[in-house]
Image (cartoon, rainbow, N blue to C red; front, top):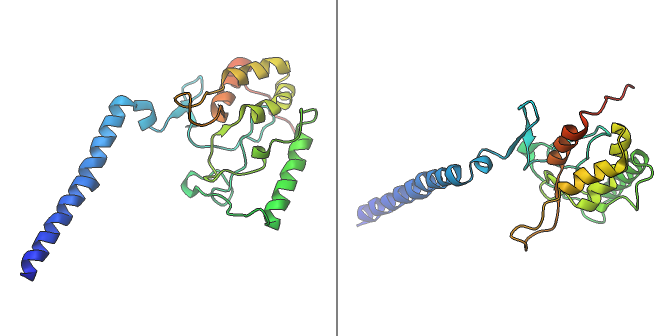
Length: 200
């Protein structure tokens, strides 16, 4: 009797493993490749030369002043590590978080002279994954003056590129309007060329 139950259990385990561990992922992957081929391949973004420069789903650092900068990242040792997705796990009473935010506010204020209003909160706070590729339109437009100055173009033209890149709510209901940092930076290069590298 025990042997019969053991064999029955092993059969059920093998059947479940094959159905849910092999067949189901293959079917879902196959359907995704047919219906959403770009997304299934990682939503890769390419520059005008056709070179892949990243994924629209994963934030990457843009430190040069001529580019839209993303929110900070706590993913991995140096941030923006797609293999180490995580938040900082620092709470509102954390001195380390307070010091980091204070330092970021000071840096952003210095790098963005003349920006309208205070530094947007999302530019000093990491997302839960540490890899959020989006910013609110307000946080993106707040950086427009610095970008325009670094690229030697009129600020209104930079604002136009950012505003043209605003994505609406999903299904007109879910989420908030946002801009994808990588897409905006590719659009800036497409419209104005790559910004000059600052000589130090």
